Image (cartoon, rainbow, N blue to C red; front, side, top):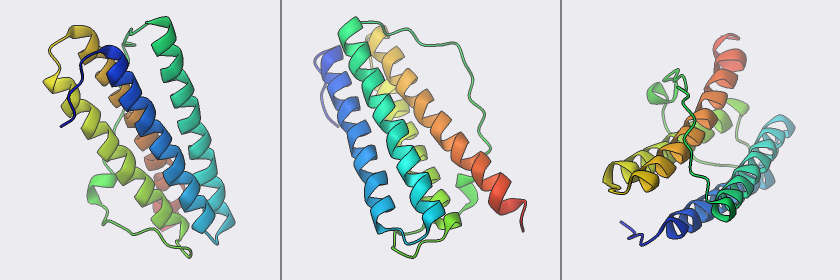
Length: 151
């Protein structure tokens, strides 16, 4: 696991992860032949860009406050099979892929928080995990509303 020597190292890492998520969603959008799926991935790329901007702002301001907020987890992603990105990906598969990615990001930040000794660093990782949890929840709600309710 990467060694962090400062809060800025952590923020730089997180900023890089958010940029990787932007790139991931834009690549999926570009590969998609389905307009609805393409639009969803473009919207999430924009969301990840906002998170990157927020992290840049945190780095500049030095504000590491963790909001006291509990994010629901519908646990839909835990019961779905993995899917591979493809040009003809269905909307359902696109949502599954996005849920799984956000779940992995959440676990990464939670694990990093568990290893952090500095309380500010721990709080920062928990804040990042919380953001990823919100993303996963949004995809789960979308899946529940448009896939599960139609079946």
